[in-house]
Length: 355
Ligand code: PHE
Image (cartoon, rainbow, N blue to C red; front, side, top):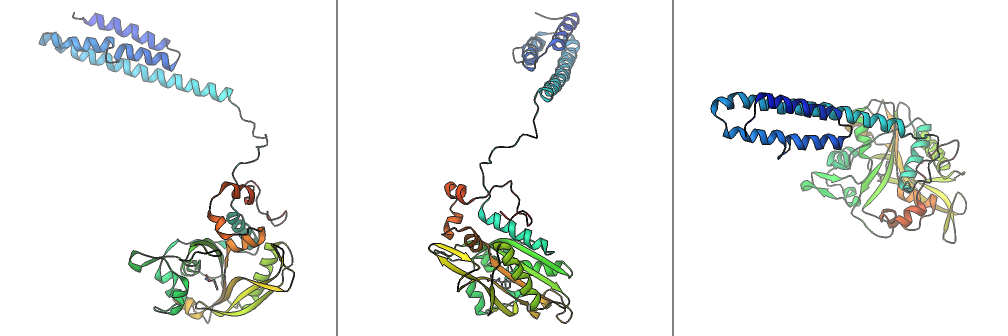
């Protein structure tokens, strides 16, 4: 059966009217399939082209293609109209009451995240900002610039994970962020750097990945008194009680003099009470930034001085919140997280309480 141009016009008029009348996306798609689908009316007419004479084809070919694209255009336009209408209807009918209280959140904030947040709040109150560095470090930032000469035995103390033929390491401490900060930023500098650190070590009190918070202050005329003041204020704010501290001489290659800071504590059964008793517990390392470290970062030690400190976040979290085993911190047991985790909607705040 062959068709005339008049037939095509009739088909066009009819289908266009159907498209205009379609009031659902499904209805519109049915019209598309009936007209342009594999076995659709227009597709079948296209198939009839094969049986036409060359002269007929010359007229009917372009006419059929024109019909097809007119219908396609009309369908797209109608589709957009229907979709917009559906969206408008949804916007008009679906409302959300932003004043409704949410239920108790099911997820909790991990104690490590909580404690890092608390530390950031305390130090930002003292004018520190938060800096970051990469977990994968190079030898220069993790060791050399921190005054660990190549081959120095202090490097062995760190049980380093080496990558890429020993050119890169998983940072063994957050101290490389000191180097990155001093190279990129002019003094005065006051930063803390929380983050993950790695050492090839695993037992009851060590995990191969753990967390530290580094601190660094660089300015003119900085001395050990500033270091002690900042850290004494910090522990009392952190444990939310007056905490006695003592500084014991120690050695780190990147500080001179160096010290470890202990807090007074007492065991009460399984519990540990910070701030009272006759025992001392080490909680951080600190010291005055070594002149060689300042020089490695392009600073003149005769002009600038500073202090640095580094502490283990996981251990401080355990001490403050009474978790007995370090390894549980990273076991991702939902029961442990539900018990020890924190409400993520409560912000640590110095005025209203840290947790
Ligand atoms: N980086 C040291 C460590 O991991 C801690 C430290 C930091 C000591 C800054 C002094 C100054 O043990």
